[in-house]
Length: 403
Image 1 (cartoon, rainbow, N blue to C red):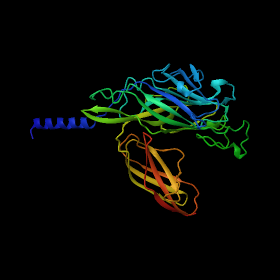
Image 2: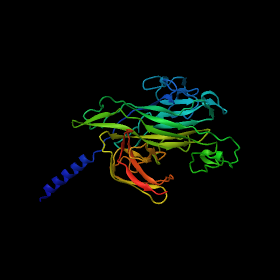
Image 3: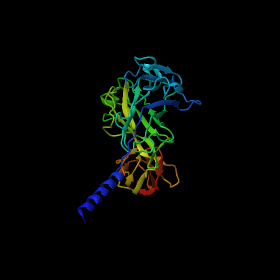
Image 4: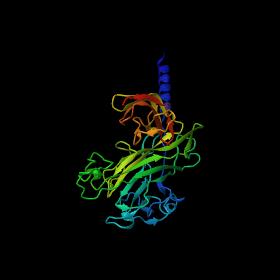
């Protein structure tokens, strides 16, 4: 083989690698969020005691208690092209019982979307990027009707395809909308001065602190902490880019929250820490976290399951599973029933996160269900959840428990 032929062959190999390894980037403008009506649904619009919505303060401000506008309808919050845009949107409720009154003393949620997504850099396919900052304003209140959950409608505007695309503006337009549900577990606070000698001193949520005696330190130092969980609703919006005449459909999914140590901190454009789908929220404090997302292909292959097994190790039931790949997979849920057609009971309190999110590789997992079960046969299901909120339930495995 001649030297010239070797050079040509080497050039072809390099060109092939560049084509196969192409990683697309996308340009995006602002992210905004609008809080919907509050549930539980008492009437057609939903309701909570003294529910209130607000626009402001300005984006990146930490003066959360002083918005520009306060409303009594969720439909009047600032939104793309209306009133303000680069600001916090808030929803609060309850009758304040602390030192603050009116809006500043209420409890609720706030979201401030980023004004420019990773400006001046662009988010790449399957790479995490910042969507915005979320806060739970946890104030002492009284409420006959509590806020159990409220949806956050998120909008990303001015989306553009990678410069190598046939047309920078995606189809059908450059705006993408999707919705996430924020659920609040408002715990009953223990009265001040509890001596921690009774069962009533127990707090349900902890973050490395003593749950039995909550008034010592940490997350329960001002009373029993609350908890906020997030979960996707069915994603119906996507955008399509055209490369060399071929179309590829994309979506934006939420990877999760990374809590901030201090509510006045700014969120970094790239994550540092582990994603979570819930935060434990300290009483009488503003509890904030960074919300991250990712662009993925709608046509992702999802989870390829190698095996799923259950066995009785002597204490509880040990569940184990292994995946070959997990494209677009957020995490897993586990369910149990005493019958293959019976009611399924969810075992894990929060989603079991993927170990290889945004990757084509697989991983191994295990989960010990320590419930005290009567002797008999039990059935276990594994469910995978992708970035759009869609789920897949796998065939059950069965195991016999000895009392």
